[in-house]
Length: 148
Image (tube, rainbow, N blue to C red; front, side, top):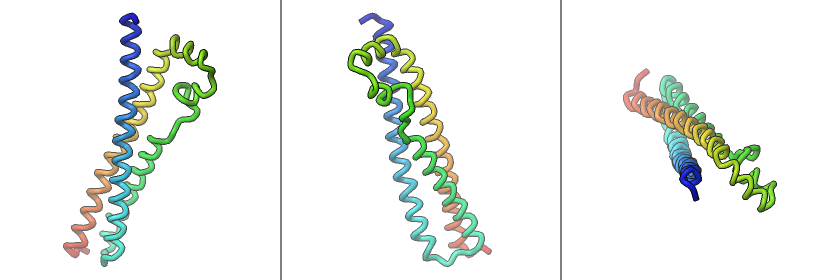
């Protein structure tokens, strides 16, 4: 195997590994967001909340739901993709070998764009989770302090 072929193979593996890492982080964050939503709903439902606490806590919950939506969007399978399983499912074994031999660089580019899109959704979801969590904490402080 020549050096350019090895470099392409290494880059292909690296991009696939980055997608796997991003999907793992996304799954963990989705579980965390779900737990926070369930916990906040359970605690908030039984507390006597002020109007301000309702508004602040409700906004925090909305942000967490939007974060969960972004996370789900990030993990949604792309069955229309031009690379990976959907394409390979339509090809014979010989066609797969031929396509991979000539189109590894194209596949790397497509997978890289997919990885960036997933990473961007994950990053936005983390920002929304942090903001939503901060608003829930603020709502708890408002309730504990009896403000307004």
